[in-house]
Length: 224
Image 1 (cartoon, rainbow, N blue to C red):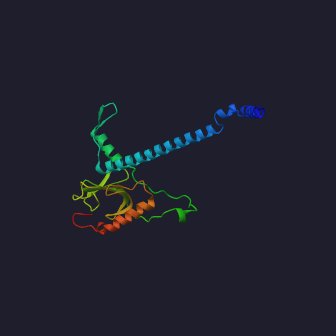
Image 2 (cartoon, rainbow, N blue to C red; image 1 turned 30 degrees about the vertical axis):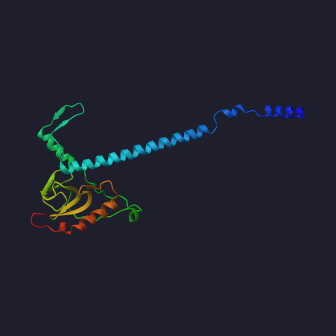
Image 3 (cartoon, rainbow, N blue to C red; image 1 turned 180 degrees about the horizontal axis):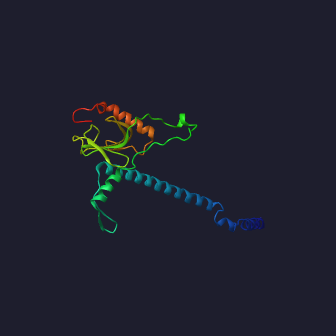
């Protein structure tokens, strides 16, 4: 009996051996490790993309705000702290330039696309002068495509009269014809920026805002 137990113990001792290969790294471990690293990199890229979009929206908003409030100076300081003094002619050219090329201009269709009735939006527009209307600091000013001032007046647009000069600003894409400004698009309304929104949404907001203020369509003493 004792011999049998000794033999059984010997068999168990010899059979209970761990394969040295089992102590090493699992062959699929590197795949899981790479997947985890890829997921971290993707999350990082997503965060960087969102941050760029956030900064881009902020920069766009600041540009429109500067456009409305004309936050420019005749002297500019560079990264090294040196101040560049500009002539009056250069400053005047700069001022015109900052209002130029802000309009989305129409183009002639050489060929009619197949998706014209489903994916395109057609807008009727009168014959007149395309202009950018900026209401801020208590005045409403219109600029042509080259950035030159066409006129300045008081209006009921947010920011365009003395009652709202310190509260807001509005920027509109218009056509001026027969002493009437026909609004095509809205870039900013009451300090809310819409330039980055889809066209359909901008048109919805524009119609809503104009419907809320029907008096905008009727010129009265002191307002246009």
